[in-house]
Image (cartoon, rainbow, N blue to C red; front, side):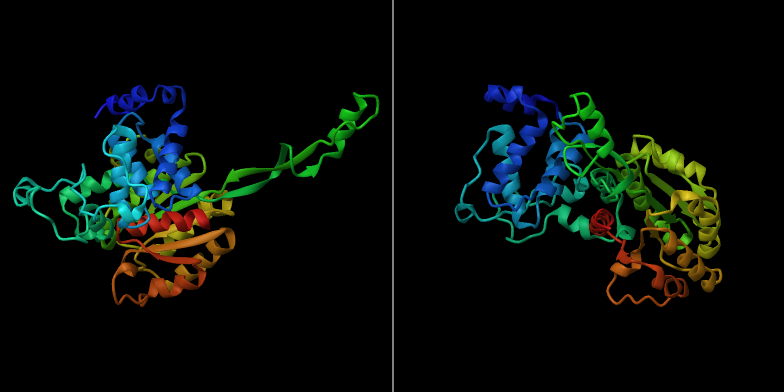
Length: 387
């Protein structure tokens, strides 16, 4: 779609044309609050940040950026669609009182989640009333195991991964900057008073700078992790795009490979293609302890892992010595601010950490999370932001 949909809105409300895109999006968020959706300030900021990374003149981009960041549960989806149509397209207005809202209908298949032609032919007609409470294709896809995706599922998920913006929390630097709040800057206040004949007209203040915390992503690309390597690299690409100067990405199997530079390419497919060409040990064995020691000796000890948030994607199947992995995890835990381990098997029912690698690593892990579905990756992004 083109910019015509946005022009429709701006032409209808001439005053809006003079306002910025942020103000338009804030107005949309406020309207959804009135409609009964619990839109918090952090969710609104996430929507604005997501739209900033996409094409604001593309209706699909704005629609999905808002839907993935502002909606809390399936009950919000109907209100969101009605609000989007009313606010941006001038269609039927959204009900102000949630009690007056019509009975929620199952979502139509969204753009990007189209089923194959033969399956579309079996879709019920618009005249038929679908079963209430039926889950949308997007909600099903969010929770589907990434190892069981079809080609059409993978194409749809690529767009959803582009909307993720994983970033570590900020930290206070040791350096100071001029500020209206904070502690009194005595030296600067005295110099200022000397310019007014020794009379203090005001106190100068300073405060610590705030900088993004370093984020290090280490992905296991061994044979047992093969179904999950594409999502891991797409998640890493989203993190590099969010903070290119404070994010580092490595892969490990039988060798350690730094792929940060390759993932800085803007286009996700081109970035993954470049990373794939740089990785020599796809789908091989796993020597987690040896490779983690190589990372710490060459990169981590020298600064990459110091006070950083480190995320390891692995199933913990170690062919080497588990004791060595345990020792290196202890080294990493002493250097890093937070260590997060994402295991795709943890999202499966009945999973227990029984492999030697996981048993050795668990004492040095701050957050042990699942990594088997898109929803688990979205939860991981929250853990990284709150760490």
